[in-house]
Length: 115
Image (cartoon, rainbow, N blue to C red; front, side, top):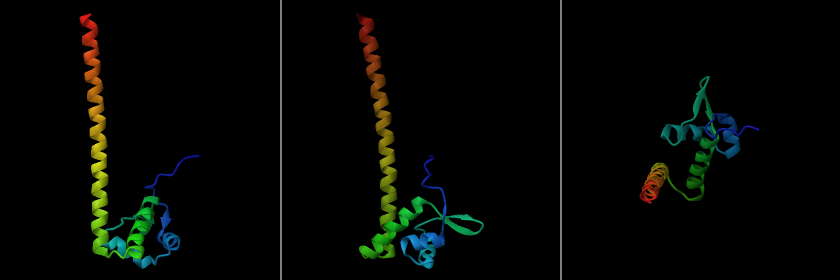
């Protein structure tokens, strides 16, 4: 069975609205605010699993934690920045690991050739 891509747009606004118990107008507001960016298909908004996860986070922040829209914006930006930094750090660690492997291989070859 093929796993679905979390970024594949598959849910219409009415479905997302029902799933998350939120008015479609709220979803449109979140889009205007730049919190979400659903894809368009025949002029209809189509949401992905990742969009739904993000909306759910926004709803938790606003409903459960009392965060206002400005706070949500800051939190979403900080979260995105942290994800970018995490990816950069993982890339750097991969690079350093490879460099260490090359260095160790070079030293082993040199040590073996000296014998």
